[in-house]
Length: 315
Ligand code: HEM
Image (cartoon, rainbow, N blue to C red):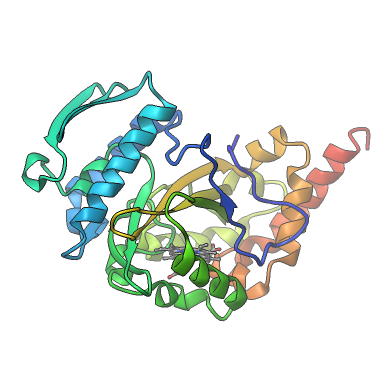
């Protein structure tokens, strides 16, 4: 089952951010940790310049990300991760992967990769760094992006990054832009994003868009209310925003979770009703953007039947 299920009474046209409290982790290693970090490393080996990019001049922020992530992992998963420091000499143990790394904090030559690229391979999350007055994307490791890639967005300010969806949810993005300007250090926030996909492929970066679009065009018309729940996946992003104290840059972390629709509906008694509420109130332009329009009639018909079954088992 998904750890988060951001479906309630209706489509949420607000930012939907919450403070990330001190007892909530920034990073969430889960049961897919080994498989997903291995997949990330494979992608980064095959196409390093596609999945990792950095503009010059943001090394302080990169080291801050490394520090924030390693200390967070140790704090919340002390049996799996540990960090010992002797001045600037840091000794990192990742017991889940049985890896040990020693390096000199702040010395780029002591790590085999840039700090953001190295620490990104220790976690399932995609890591994006935004900096400057307009919160521009200055560095990132993005392996599991949903329909975008670094080539398209590197160097762009927050507002331009969202250009494809600004006409659909402009007030939400105006609030988000203000949040990017005013987010204080030490007060991280998180939010959830959702979509429904015909594939459970984690890497949905733009290079896969033509193939995924083709899958949608070819398969969506044949989906019926009887078959659709086995063929669709609910894809959730847990997104965190953290202002880094020394550089003032913002770390945007994205953990992608996904599960088959039939499994969510069978295990969560109110899932069908909640999904119906949200899909029926989502603006048509947003359904189009998310690529859900081609299967929406069959999906809603399935959910109606499923909610009747869960609310009235004898019917
Ligand atoms: C509170 C902060 C944020 C809000 C409310 C927000 C909201 C959204 C929404 C509503 C979408 C449409 C996608 C969907 O709903 O499935 C979207 C897409 C996207 N967001 Fe954000 N976002 C936030 C932060 C960020 C940040 C910090 C980045 C940094 C890179 C980012 C990058 C993107 C990208 C690349 C897309 C896809 C755009 C495209 O199709 O080209 N978002 N965002």
